Length: 433
Image (cartoon, rainbow, N blue to C red; front, side, top):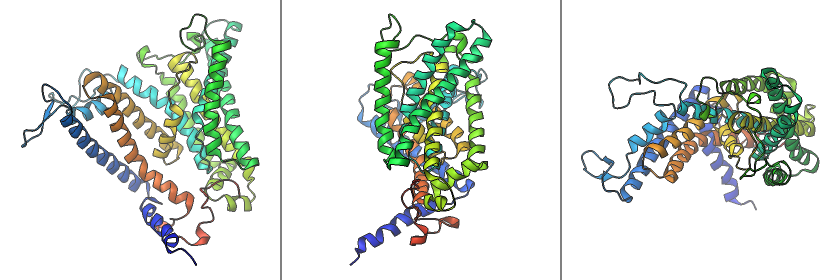
């Protein structure tokens, strides 16, 4: 006898995800804008409640009509969050719309673009795996391995070449290639385990994050640590072998050339996924693994290829982190790989969408720094506001991804379909038949 609750479950899930599946680009853009506005409204209320509970000698904001005072000004918080991340181009509270003294080559915008550049690579890394129906949670570990491979390669080759611009170009190219190889190998491991041992890639990639972080830490601590360094870090790579900031302040840790390289990778990856036979195999395996294999796709090889490419992109992200931001490998690597998961979901796992998604994430991180500098709002509350915006914007794409991969919704306009012929790929788009 069938369980009536079990029979009702698919229809409930289908009704939940149906509005988000097979939407047009314009409709998805409207949904994203609405999600941002809703998150701002919820965050506004949260700042008010926190400001009412907090204690202060003078109210930072008084609610109109009621006369209630609050320790935090929610309007100022959002103005600083978005305007501050760009270096205050808008003249808020002053005559005129734009700040006459604003220049795009300022420190705040440089920090925002630095974060954006790094997240482009980690976002692409996760997106490639997702398009193949694989959940690569190990981009952070692949980034760590790629960063270490880059630092050690550049440090080993630098003494062999005469210092200068030509040597710098060679070292940057070879170092980036080394990062791609290191990250690719680290990504291929869970790919091979998935393809030939049916190991869950979520578990293996998570575990390999810890392995990568701790092995790299021990290697640097015991073998490659810079002499006299108070932290676990390698020596600095030569300045001529780093991405130079050019127009931006050096303290911004941003190089325009690195961003242009990231944009080039977006275009190349989009072409690869959408217009090549290997990319077609990758996409079809992600949408319907059984049908793809029936059509002649080598599912196991596609799995290994996808995870290797995903890991290579994560490793390049580590290379850029070393050659643009830090100038060396050090143990305190930020969680760029995990942030890349959010960026990929925001982008709908589309390489083209990674650029605006990474830029939004960069604005939220850069603006959070400005709030900490210019207001009395606690950093914990700022993190909550940033998380709210990301959550609200990501949830529509998250539901859309669930609907597309499980097959509980499909067809034009998101029509619900729950028949068995529509749910053959209900395993989440895994590449094993």
